Length: 134
Image (cartoon, rainbow, N blue to C red; front, side, top):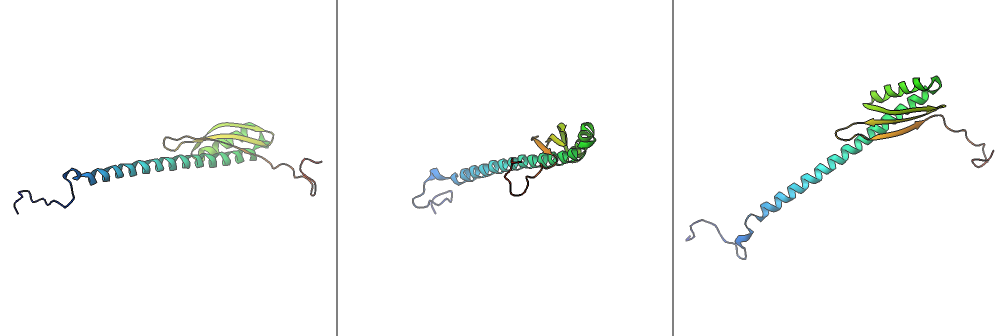
C-alpha cells in the first residue's frame, strides 16, 4: 500500500492527462448543441418560407377568382385569404384577369415575403404548329 491517496498509476500514463476526457466531452457537447441550434433555426426559416408561399398562392388564386368583379373586390378577398392563413397581404394588383400578390408570413424571428401570380392559362397553339405561329 504505501501511497497515501489510493491512486494507482497506469504504466505509461501521465498525471498531465487527468481530466482531459471531461474537456473533450464538454467541447463535443457544446459543438453538438450549436449544430442542433443551427438546424432548428434553418428548419424554422424554411417553414416560414413555405407558409408564406402557400398563403401567397392561395391569396393570388382568390384574387384571380374575383378579378372580373374589379380590383378592389379581388384584393379584399386576397386579404381575407392571407389573414386566414396567418399571413399579411403586403401588395395586391389586378390587371385584367391576372392577380399579382405579395404576402408576408411571420414565424419566430423570420418574416419572408413571397410573390405569387394567378390568372387564366394562355391560349394553346393549334395542334401541329409551334408556339408563336398563327
